[in-house]
Length: 154
Image 1 (cartoon, one colour):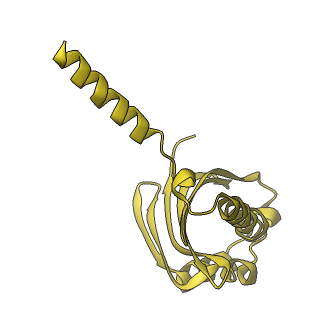
Image 2: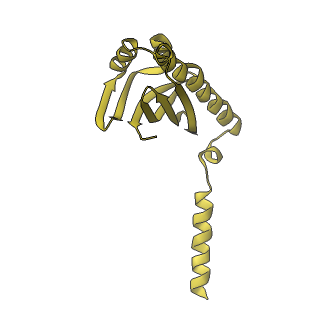
Image 3: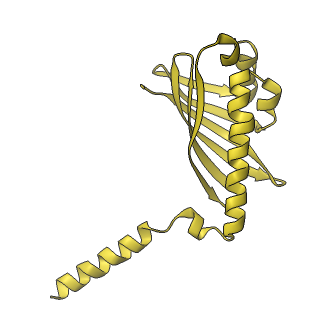
């Protein structure tokens, strides 16, 4: 009987701990909603739009100047500085001009105080990217401080 009570107690403790979300730990739920909407706005109005249109100025406005990009593309390691990435965007045909399908979708946004991670998917050309974008809030503005990507099978 003691074993059942102990197991039940452990189960309830683990279940309760697993249900705690970042939003519940966030100091102010109102700010969480505002910050989540702000990050979604950065993603929809600048990140996806900038990639689609090849707008280097727009993209540059949402990245911290020291941002690094890591990942793999077609199974090969991928590493670029922000300057290298923006130069690549500048010198390629934009998805908009190519006439090929493009989509950018937000999967999730997790926020803890002044840091956040957005999980997104970007489909362009023959690529389907899964991306993790780290954000930091600077002077009330959310900026991307790290980008990790992987080209995955559709």
